[in-house]
Image 1: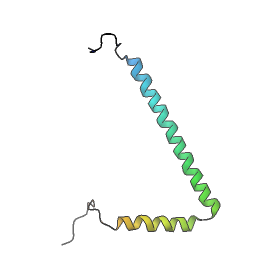
Image 2 (image 1 turned 180 degrees about the vertical axis):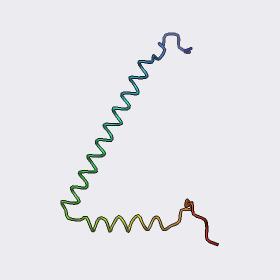
Image 3 (image 1 turned 90 degrees about the vertical axis):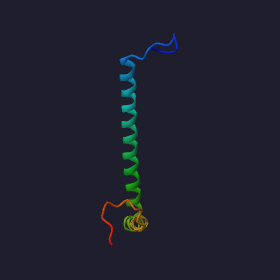
Image 4 (image 1 turned 135 degrees about the vertical axis):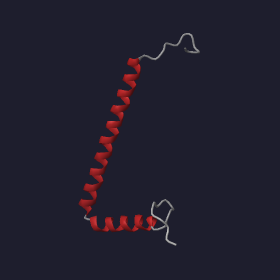
Length: 78
């Protein structure tokens, strides 16, 4: 029961409509992300920097992994 006497309760149709809108929005965002990924990949290919970019990414992210954040599931060496 609502605390506001003039407020209509939410119907099943309202909930279904809201879920469908959210689903459509999620699909649109996913399509846009895919498009951005393709555009960035095409631009890197166009510039001819694939090897240099890969080397840059490998160096940047491998150095972060070597810090040992303590989240490894492997047993510690003693």
